[in-house]
Length: 172
Image 1 (tube, rainbow, N blue to C red):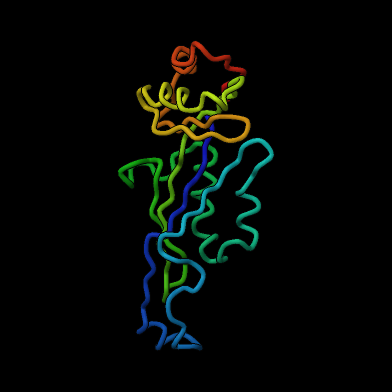
Image 2 (cartoon, helix red, strand yellow; image 1 turned 60 degrees about the horizontal axis):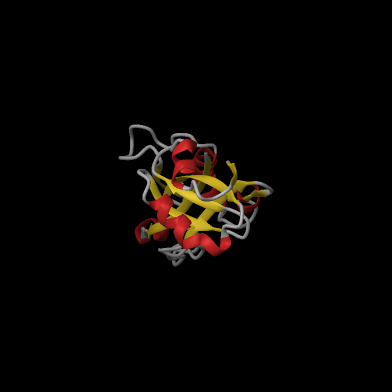
C-alpha cells in the first residue's frame, strides 16, 4: 500500500481588530500566500519525494510548521488524527498567524501501484474491472503504471482475480 497526502485550502480568516492593535502594518489584510480552493498533493513513491522538496520554500513557513507533521504522518500511512475527526485519514488544521489564519483540510490517500504488461491500449477495461471491486475509489494511469485509489487496503489476490486476462508484473 502506498500513500499520498492531499492538502486543500478551505478557508482564510481575517481578524482586523488584532491587526490594528498588534501589527506594525495594521492594514496587512488576509494571507497573500494561499487562495481558497488551492490543492497540493504530496507523494513519496519511487524517486519522487515531495515532502522534502515542497516544504523548502514552496509554502509559507508558518503554515508549513503547522501542517507538515500531518503531511508526514499521512505519507507514512499513519492515522492523521485518530478519534478527533470523523476519519482518521483527515485533519483540519490552520497556520500560526493569529491575525490572518489559513485553514487546511489534510487527507491521506491510500493506493496500490499496479505494473501491468501492455496496459495502455486496455486502460478503459482495466479501470472498469478495478472500479467494480469493493473499496476501490478510482483508477489513475501514468506512463508506466496504474494507481488504484482505495478506501481501505484491498487484498492483492482480489486485484489479480479482477484482471485475470492481463499480465500483472508487480503490485506495490
